[in-house]
Structure formats: structure tokens, C-alpha cells
Length: 120
Image: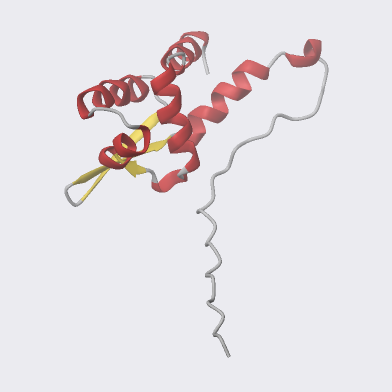
């Protein structure tokens, strides 16, 4: 990642609402969320959300995909990892140190089904 790209990404995240959107999408992994669900989860007006999604997308941090009549937004984990690598490239004074963690999203865990105990 080049400095200009890092500045653009950091600038996009340097706003409270966009940071909240990005963190929510990170939690939801590659499957992402529809704009409506993001708006509901964060209590954001649709026009405001649209503006913030555009800014995050322009910074290369989100991707959008269409399924049926819905647009799903998801975080680009590859770009997040590039940004983390850029930020930590010169840590430890250029000396080898612990490798930076790389985020590899997995499908959300299947929640255990609660079984109701029958009264005897």
C-alpha cells in the first residue's frame, strides 16, 4: 500500500459514523449486510448512510455486491490487512519482531441451539 492510499483509508475511518459502519461490517464478515440492516443497527438515516458507504467504498475499504434486489456491503479484509501492514512496516526500529496478525474472516459461528428441558 502506498502512502496516498493509506491516508485515504485512514481519512475515511477518521469519522465516528464511518468507523462504526466499518467495525459493524468487520463483525459480519464476508457475507456483509444490506444497507437497510446497517441503517437499523446503527440508527442512521438512509441518505446519511449512503454518503458514508460511498466514502468508505472510495477509500477501497468496502465492496458492494447485488443479490436479487438488495445490495450487500462487506469490509474488504485484504485492504484492512494491507493498511495494518503499512502502519506496522517499520515497527521495532526496522528490527525483526513478532509478525503482525492478519485478519482472515471465517463464517460466523453457528450458535448452539438451546434445548428446552421438559418438566417431568
